[in-house]
Length: 225
Image (tube, rainbow, N blue to C red; front, side):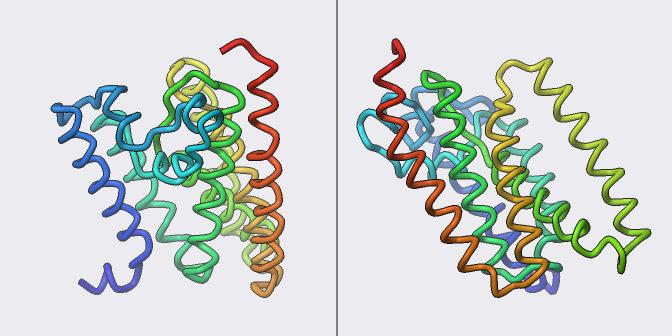
């Protein structure tokens, strides 16, 4: 119980993703692999609906959906490992802001790169908070010299493994991962330098989000769907 009180946000996000999976499994009729039509029905990203029909709420809902049990377990283990670290070094508000913007902007980039793909998963958001941790250790590398070196080595290994995995498994959307990572690193550096930069970060990422939402319909009009 003490563990839950210490990391309420991480466990809360895991709980939301698990609840969303159970709902999608109920709609799909399968607990192991979720049917694509069921995923779209419960809120997955799908370019024509998200962009052309203005269903932008899918940018948020898709972050909590997963395509199968393996997908869910891999992301929840990653969230458990990375999220607790973020919850130690950042405020709850900063954690949630970085998580959500990483997932939303990752979803927008994914919609631009793969307009006809069905997109789900917390990976972009998880890469975001992982990037925030990297930003924290970059800022505090002199004070936490040994810890920073160890983290950056692990960081490079994990990035390398994910890059290789993304190159070998076509269903993995590396564009969302990279976008989420960049959003997270920026947030980690800004908020580690000064937590008061939170509103500036929200403004910056809000502008980026709105610019992408504004420009995507025009971009879709130029490509054959």
